Image 1 (cartoon, rainbow, N blue to C red):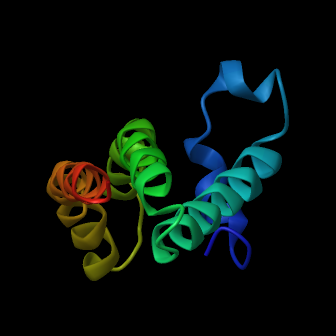
Image 2 (cartoon, rainbow, N blue to C red):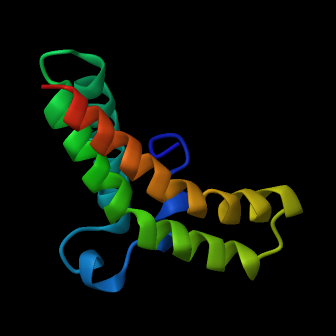
Length: 107
């Protein structure tokens, strides 16, 4: 979605980061990082480092996911979109834990 509908994610980019690069650049860059993490986890030789990077990524994007939920709460989006924005929040920490477990188990 970062590449298809980047405008959905652009409001989540904090002001200080916008002074370094545009919101669109951050969104596209984070989409590329997500794909790189997925590719690294998929390959046995890079799984350990990919899982570590994925855990870090899941933790770093949490504030953006919180902001999305808050933004959606105040929007006129359909109820299912607002619900999904909130339901994804408690999933972040299990994702971090899973990535760390994959990292640990990929010696």
